Image (cartoon, rainbow, N blue to C red):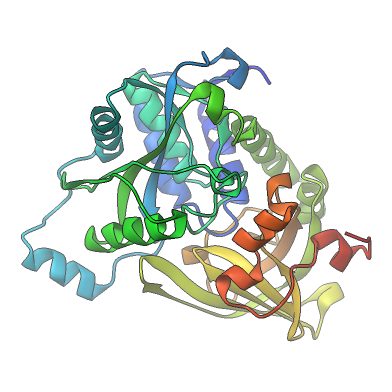
Length: 378
């Protein structure tokens, strides 16, 4: 895929919309992501991503993220923050600071940023940091969708170490995780820094040279987000927008209905909860339930197990097919649930172990989306 620069507000909006779609309910706030891109565009900084083929093999790269919960802070969190003397954040470039801290630790100049996942603010933030610092941003990410845990990434499936890691919060507190007993232990430590930082922290990790990085990423995904956002915008004028979007991404419309109940809570640095939907139209009298941990991960149709991660469950507004992040979901919304096949690395035994139902504590087997919906053998 060719490299690309976002040159208009419409392109920026399309890009964030596509990122939100593959965020599968997580991946951060679209308004935050769009705001970050606008800020850099207004400053005259090019919002550009670069094809993997154009990145020198000996360049040092890092994955950067805003790791933590997608939920707003609770009153208790705000009160505790005040007691610690932490007012408004004082370090707006905390992600760039994390890159600098990691570079000092490994003793190499880092020149390439790899987005952590696909999500409205998490991917946009990586692109914005690249624009602000002049670092190259790769047209790739480490998942091909959004995921709740750093350990749910493609390098882990290949047995690659994801440390050392540098963590910087919005007040400048800095920590280095030099090594860990395993990727899930590293995730635990990073998650606790996000809790300590009252929501999220900037993380720079996966310090690979580009020749190694290209072996363990999902390629061309920023271009994919832009094209998907364009498809969502164009579908809004069609008779059934959700069907048009599903066709554009080779997905399936799993359910249409109304949100009957939605509940979520901050827990251990994640946004946990469930959505309960009552069917309309072709799904009249049916029920659909989604469990999320930042992202939508497990579903039930009429109380029977249905589509699960690694495949994507994407909740969208029925009228426009605009994707909803989980904090945006409200009772009474008319919605549809779209299903999209997971990226190929997660269709392997290692990928299913890493991101399937049993990883999240559900005693059920992963069944591919197309087998459940189309009756096709996996």
